[in-house]
Amino acid sequence: MDDFAFIFAISCAIIALIYACKFLNWIWIRPKKLEKFLRQQGFNGNSYKLFHGDSTEMKAATKEAMSKPINFSDDILPRVTPIYHKALHKYGEKCFVWVGPRPTLVILDPEIIREMLLKNYDFHKPPGSPFDRQIANGLSSLEADKWAKHRKLLNPAFHLDKLKHMVPSFYLSCGEMLSKWDEIVGNEGCCEVDVWPHLLTMTSDVISRTAFGSSFEEGRKISQLQKKQAQRVMEENSSVNIPGYRFLPTKANRKTRQTTKEIESLVMGIINKRMKATEGSADDLLGLLLESNLKEMRHLGNESGMSIKEVIEECKIFYFAGHETVASLLVWTMILLSKHDDWQARARDEVLQLFGRGKPDYQKLNHLKIVSMIFQEVLRLYPPAAVLDRFVEKEMTVGKKVRLPAGVKIALPVILSHQDCKIWGDDAREFKPERFGDGVSKAGAGWGPQPAYIPFGWGPRICIGQNFAMLEAKIAMAMILQRYSFQLSPSYSHAPRSVITLQPQHGAHLILTKL
Image 1 (cartoon, rainbow, N blue to C red):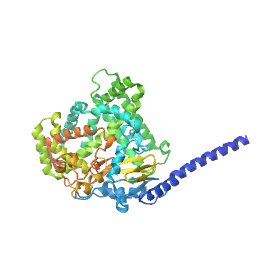
Image 2 (image 1 turned 135 degrees about the horizontal axis):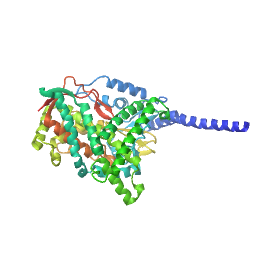
Image 3 (image 1 turned 45 degrees about the vertical axis):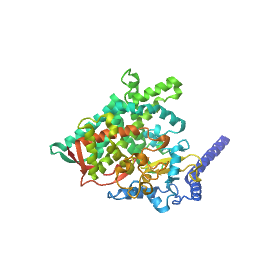
Image 4 (image 1 turned 180 degrees about the vertical axis):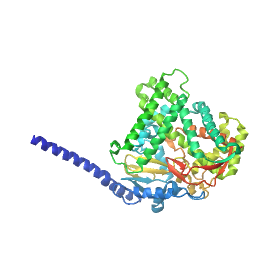
């Protein structure tokens, strides 16, 4: 027994020592090695601070940025990306910041951005935190061959010939929102409305209808649960991720797991009903995905398709990636058109000339040239995703012999490229839709082959839902312009902030006038 106790004690001590060494490497040795490597490559940033890195400074910078609104003429970058803005101002274009014990490089060189977005097998999405995976673990977070398989299976659902069948859902959801505005405005014909929550509800309902069709009410419940889940995940991600913390039986962790199970149970119920249906089940995203998946498995075998668990994760992604992107585009469009009423009038004239007061005709939506120019300029100034992230899995050389060590994150600030005066001219921060008059490719000077305009990403991983988003936005904006004119309310505060998507912190208070 004494020998056994001795051996057991030694074994425990060895295991403890191994884990202590791993922890020491994670918390200190590896960060210091990475810092030395980066400085040798000409990158600069704050010295690493044990455990927290720049987290304290990040929170202070974000708190300061969010503390007060700005003027329309002010640069929005210090408010939207405060920590990157400070690092660039302090250290120049080759800089890094510490997110806990991991450095994040800020990359502005268009040549390197192009290379990273093209080489999606080399530069992956950053590994999400365990809390991120509670929201969804589908296409946007998959890599390499698994990503390619899911992309192939999802592509048919987003073809334009399939999307046209979803147009009635766009009409219905936007019509319901406008009816609510009619009730609020009443007989006076003019009223202040915070349009932001209404746009969020409308785009959420669109996703519920187009994703699940006849199971709309269940879809609505999934959407509400996803929103709550996202809020909790953002709260958890605001602090340093401690390995194993998610397994602790805290109130927040229990609630997160409970919500995840509830969402998956609802989606599973819808899928089971759909798989038993014999007709009319392939007009929505879920039906199209199941159809595509079944065809692939019949042709190439079960391993070529998705499991039911994977289908559930893709359904969750529909919500997470779908509704806030379109809502962000619509709200900033309404805000900017409120500020520039000449462009609002031009857009309305175009809509009325094409559609009159009737429903926007799907076949004529491509003729909305002015509306398209406005959208493109809004996406340039207020891209839904202000920053794209990538991760270096192994040591790489990019651009003109710039070496990047394994284990660093990369921040590609879309919003900085979109407002770079070297590309767009001295008026880069001004709202001028006319710059897109001859199309996207001729909008900025000196682009060359580099991606300077990437509101939906670029390269192989460009957003699969881009056509869906633009179709929905065109129909919604056309219907709004047909029925209402709008201007900024005196109570409107200009306060853009990045919360997954670029959003108005204090809402979008506009004066709606019924036409």
